[in-house]
Amino acid sequence: MIHFLNNLFAGCNSDYKSSRYVIFGVPYDATTTFRPGTREGPRAIREMSYNFETYMPSIGLNLGDLSITDLGDIDTGVLPDDMVRDVSEVTGDIIRDGKIPVMLGGEHSITAGAVRAVMPDCYLVCDAHLDLRDEFRGTKNNHGCTTHRVIDEGIKDIIIVGARSGTQEQFELARSLMLFTADEIQKRGMKQVLEDILDAIGKKRVYLSIDADVIDCCLTPGVGTPEPFGLAPQDIRDLIAAVAPRAVAFDYVEVSPFDNGQTAMVAAQMVREFIAAHAKSSIKN
Ligand code: MN
Ligand code: MN
Image: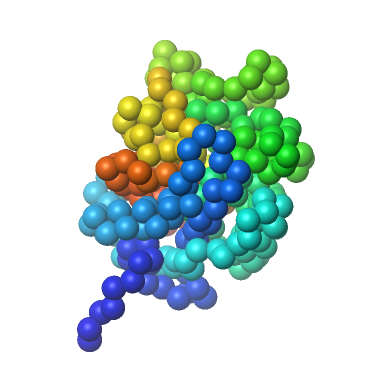
């Protein structure tokens, strides 16, 4: 039998009905504030996914043995509110079908739609930015407003990891949530901070959102709003491995692949780490 190559995430060969994990992309960057280009994120992440073996030695699991599908990209309009509605509809269908949505961005504003559909007990976001503006440049669904939209949905437990940029007002608001700045993680180490995070999560249903710019821009420069003095890829990998068992949805956003591919490469591997760690924990339980 001749196999056909396609441009979907590598190894996602299951049909929707039998899949536990459902990948989809949202190539949207209409509200970007600094550098555009995150609309190319899903394509670049999928392209890089073909670099890796399906076997995940650290987890002892072969991704090829899991049921994963990739729906492709949402064809959404340019208006932020329309995009959020479309993402919410797609994510809601996946959740109602008892599956785990794995969303590839696109800018961070897409997360507002997914969170609205999932309605998790806890929102855990790794991001250089607080994203706590109420409104920016004429829309409440700017990518700098995402965490504020999550508050508006009524989600009480919000954990921000790796932040190092925001207005004074945003930092005051963030301190009423649970905030672990990049400097604090640098000082205490991610392993230590993860103990606090896992204590706070307990048995709650978690939405896990990774903004690619949480990682130091000197390591992965392919992002729309780069910030230095950030976390290492290994920190985020450790967090994903620890939190995945409690997660009901996952996204990786803000990859803007004008670098040498390293940002999308890291993103593709993080997506695989999430799925593998999540699957491993459901096999154990
Ligand atoms: Mn963000
Ligand atoms: Mn950010």
